[in-house]
Length: 441
Image (cartoon, rainbow, N blue to C red; front, side):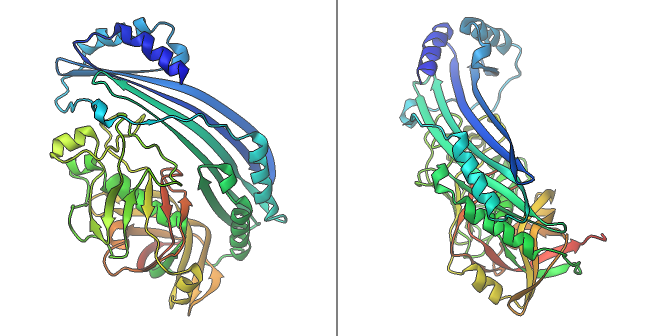
């Protein structure tokens, strides 16, 4: 905190009062313990303090980035921006800066997790599958974010995250599991390890099945991937502006069992409580009982669409990327995993998706593969492991009206194609999901 205070006190001496200015610093300490072949082989740690300086004058904007240790003279750093602003293109969509009424002070001094503590979590994961080959990582991070602008806003916040992610492997199969929390003590890596080990053992010697439409029970990671694609490509207001989003606010586009909201103020929320501009976030309804409720807005997209800012500008992505929810919760239902499987006549259990790519953003058709635990379900029982399948499926239709049979009764943080700690989700039981190819094509 003192480093930031000293830096702001010095650099603001050289900011002319005639222009708009925003200064941001992200101080992050990221620690990682990796394991492979059931042994820890790497402990790494990195601390960075990145600086963003944005100036706006005469309808032109410039942003310079640097690391705090690289700025030997704040005056020279500002002068470089002042020299370059006249050569910047006209910024027709400039939306100004948040005023001091939106400030938030959430900075905390947090004691960092130790390598020994991460090693214990890894040990518990490995020991859950002693006869199997395991690999993965345990990570911890502390991030402190500070914002100052010429409108009088000063904001800060602190976010912590901890994750265990790993697989157990046999000669013919693998099973994976993932857990996330704000504190390492809140993660039960033994349970995660047992889950991965059971998936690996049960997945041995998988068989190929014919592609087609199947009823599916989707694990937490598979559900998270569907929702993160909808969040990034659907509910991002920038994609709506660009004509690339299928989302229409106020329409019943999803099954009534689907309720998704963004809430940075939950006790278990990992993400920041301020957006990249320093404005305090608020709880936001994204999908309410199947009805699309809101886009994720930044100050720019809100201005362009003449809608209210939802404060979802992302740090490090630039304010032209659009808004993304980073504290997303899918409301749980009332069915256990066992109950879901019992209700399937013929279908597939999918632990997770990977290598997913958008084919058509307007219909949200995505193609990808399954991995690390997939099983054929017949007459309410898992009968055999299945091999690699390619799906080609509209994610918006997958969660569409009448296609959601039930929602799981327990939720957790799940990994996805766009990173961990964004989505807290239950499992889902879906009526139809389209698989278009297998190992042979």
